[in-house]
Length: 553
Image 1 (tube, helix red, strand yellow):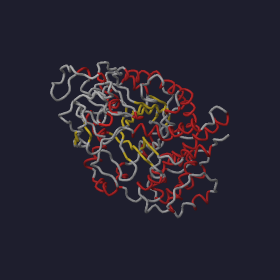
Image 2 (cartoon, one colour):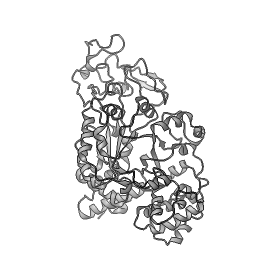
Image 3 (cartoon, one colour):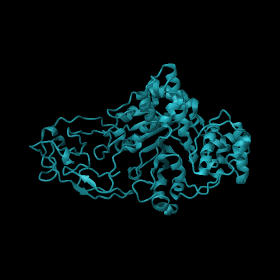
Image 4 (cartoon, helix red, strand yellow):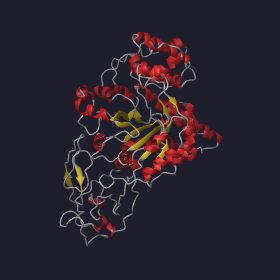
């Protein structure tokens, strides 16, 4: 076999990380102060580790209670050697390797080892994090994009009143920027976190969109909730997401009310939630079908180039034959701006601007990722996802990555098998950490190893071809490109925006005089106006001279 695990892994191990859903603290990232102790970075905010310590019999006092940091660290060192077989043990090996790398300025290899417990701690006892900041850690992990989720009420505080962001420019973040983007090579962009049915105003959605949000995370603990959502919610959040090119995450089936004792001691995110029975696919299908059948009230006002290098065709979008979406003055035979009033006929419409304008679905279904906490639902959701699709949008609705209690080798393999058998694996968006810890980015490497091992086994058995031309794009898509395209491929208009005389922003095929065809209407000449139309990230403004809102992203 030519393409063994080592070869496959070599293709993806250095790919950048796009982490499109996590729970990192935006203020901590913005401050970018030196990291604290190893306990603070590695253990303090990780409910997975807290849960394991409880199962091993450690008292709550040394987990989340009033014990000293040294006592809590000692509790974790007692616990870790007992975790062989738990994914925490495998992650810890990679985290320790990474930490050893930070000690001498080299990136850790992440290679597993079988050292005795005493050697584990000796390997990190001299690690100092005093010179390490969140941005340095993220760059070491080769993070390209990360999207911490925040609630609707948290964003405005970060942008306007949170004094902790005063250091932002020095730390590499500019709170006045359209995107909370570091000066380094990676982006930090907030995503919206909410429960299904939460009241979210259009103004709030606009604020998130203005800072670059591309993901809305919707918790649906009981899928029966989907049957009772108010029509107004359906016409607001999903419709807005569909029009702006956001992706909707549906987190399905968490059982959050388990131990009242632990909730009182450790808070709502203390690591004690359970999983419900497998979700009812009929409820999910009815919800998705309802969105696909719901008129999108935003579709005529907002357009954005979409993921995957495709032009997003949301709502009742009319695509002129010149390739422009709702922006070309010839659409519907309307006269252009300038010497004619809008809405009157134009007697000189070039052939390329004829009246044969295809109609696209006018619906409120955005790109959707289905994430079930109970793995028994993976097959039914993977099958269901294939019923909801859109021209030019690969994997519009799909089974998402192994989530929460499923985020281990067995769970990852199950998701890979189901996406391959019931969907199209090459459209799978791959891994995200869904974590509160900076060190959890080792899980991307963990995922890549599991994926490459799984593919190598398929090749060895003859199920997959032993062909780099087929395998390499598959692995690169799943490990990086699909996620990148989902959140990063929207066309950005920085600084001066090229505005063709027809009113289109960098979309019109006439904007570059080198691309002009012999029949160029007067409005599509080679004079490209420069539009300096700044947009406040909190309050986007409208250009009164434009039919549609000017969206800078």
